[in-house]
Image 1 (cartoon, rainbow, N blue to C red):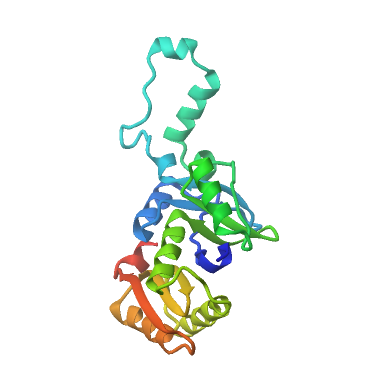
Image 2: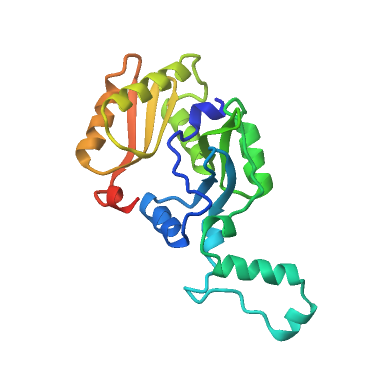
Length: 230
């Protein structure tokens, strides 16, 4: 399997000018812990995560520095702490050190990267554009899908079968959030969130009716408040 076989293609992003409150609400509503920050040209300029919103003045969790630490500490560190606890937009809080991968990277490379940099996710960039996001959860989903299929081997047709399943799901007209499709030996595992049980059923039917699919494992939840929260 490669990154393109397991990555989440539907990526929720925010702009550099996105307000802190909107960012927090988006994360909560969509059930995610991080967002790529994308500028008007479609370029990923940063990543903002739960960790960037943990120490905030509003929640009285901002770092408190004693007077003697202020004297001996780095002015730059003090300034950075203040920006992170009081900044009001994504550009002030995001990490500008972007660790990215390409669609054709191996899963081994992704695992090494996420572990080595102690991060949970990485944007997938192709020709300078964001095409998806791959996370630790995606790697676990891939492992689960492989063993659900009964063998750790992937057939050569799984990539094209995944594309056809995604095409058929798109034809349902259902709005999905963080939909991810993983195919291993003809068995389809589906993750994501929709706004109703009917939409969940439509996705299952679309996958089951795709020629070549041997089985479908549903991990999609229905959240009626999702559309109004994002």
